[in-house]
Image (cartoon, rainbow, N blue to C red; front, side, top):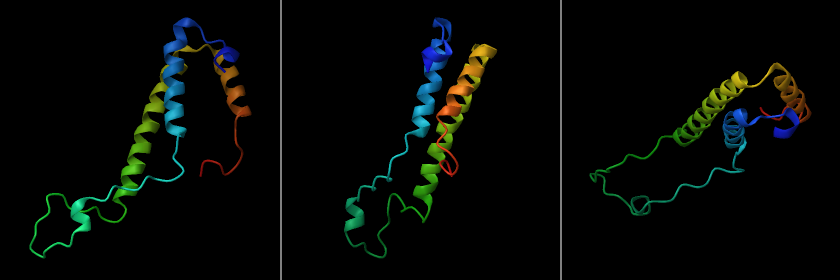
Length: 110
């Protein structure tokens, strides 16, 4: 795609930053990796034993994952704006056409 839209040397850093951010955002693991079980979780605790770190509430791990994805989305938006500022109108049109051919169709990004 870099060659197709005619990225010039002066545009290369912005292009590579954009494609790296896009790849990072789209790289979604099939499953969230399981959390390692700590030693304190495997031992029964005494009712009065204090814990240095409280256990997470329901949904906190999911929220952490969503916040990570949101941070990656923000980086992509920033890199896209930077790329848009260095591409010509012709290059932007070529990029839109090329991206349209990669569209996976309805329902893919829900």
